[in-house]
Image (cartoon, rainbow, N blue to C red; front, side, top):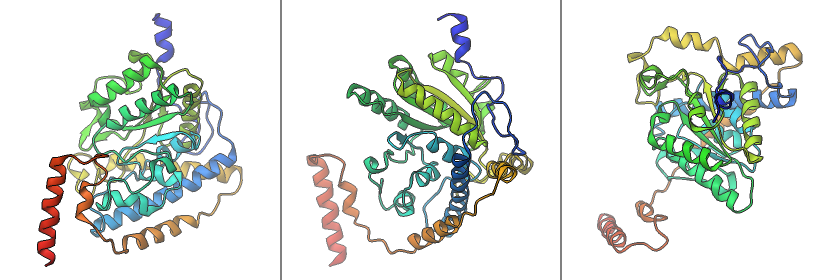
Length: 356
């Protein structure tokens, strides 16, 4: 590969931005999405933020075992979904609840995972979304394999693998990206760089200028985008998906954003970062900047659905759930192995003893 070819794969010196923090259009090298798309993005982000606040509150009340909040990352959650077509597949991490909500999934289907009721409480084929992945970066391998399989069957489905900045340090992420670039799979790697892998800042994970720089080393374009600018996120994801669908291979997108809440309800961010840092990122807020743009160019829509989703979520968490411990053994093998049947029988016998 020639030097000029490598240079074409490198990201811009600063993240791509189409709306600045004041909500003013800026030249970012991409066309600003039309107003209808931006109104829908605004509506979805308002719903997502209310959802994140409600679920976090329910977790603190003990209604959920744990919850990794994406509060403050709504532009990435919503923009990544709106940049794809409905027939494309999502491969989410555990932090992508708002992305699944944007796809149209019911809160009951999303929260069963965090409540410990079911591993996956939704039909992946109905929503074209794989299970929420807690092991870091494993879903990136699934996204690449799925895209390759779709290609072998003559379909141009695009897969989008969500990653955090921390998970890009995993071997699985590198293996997935290398396979995708080598085989030119129709995959978009969407990295939400929220600055911390739990408590570890990015500077302690890599000396690279950016995560997006790694794309050039693997032979795929790397794009750095303002992760709090939903217009820019939609534009770059849309272009990456179009490239992938046209058979031009994968793209690595790094969306620079910030996790305003704790990593999970078991984390205390005051132990590793200053509150002033979070305050500075609040000034880059994705919803406020788009609201300013919409107000300057027309009406800002009311979003009554946000409170409706919050009420629906509270209602779901107040439902009584019947749990069958023997379901632990279901859906593991098409034909259960002898050892698994033996364990299941032992548990069934113990449960029967307790009920007697």
